[in-house]
Length: 128
Image 1: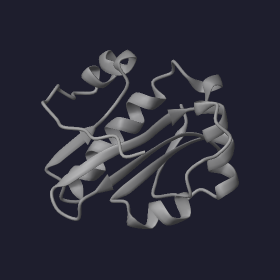
Image 2: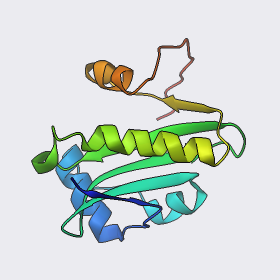
Image 3: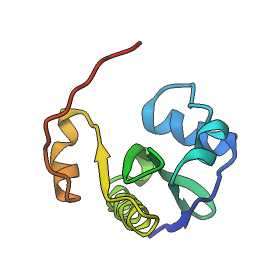
Image 4: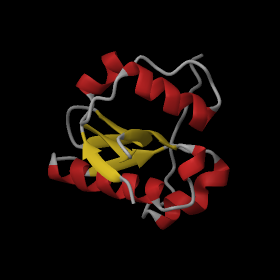
């Protein structure tokens, strides 16, 4: 099982490599601007290589938001994503969040339900 690190601040190269493998897109977000504002982020490392990641954004109050959960395809189906979400939940609670929100695609419903998330009514406007 990988080592899970709280707030590791991976390098842009590490995040880009994982992002490309996990999302099949060449451009990772500019995490150098994002992570310092996050409530927490968790990295999963195997042999000192970033193989999983999740970011916990927040509103500065009681609401936190799970973002960018990903695991390298070579490391999937080993419980890494589940452990990332559990760690994110634990840390968010410890740091004062009372609510943890997540948006996800329909094919991930069973995963997030297994992690304890329940459906809610929510509004959404696509801005771009």
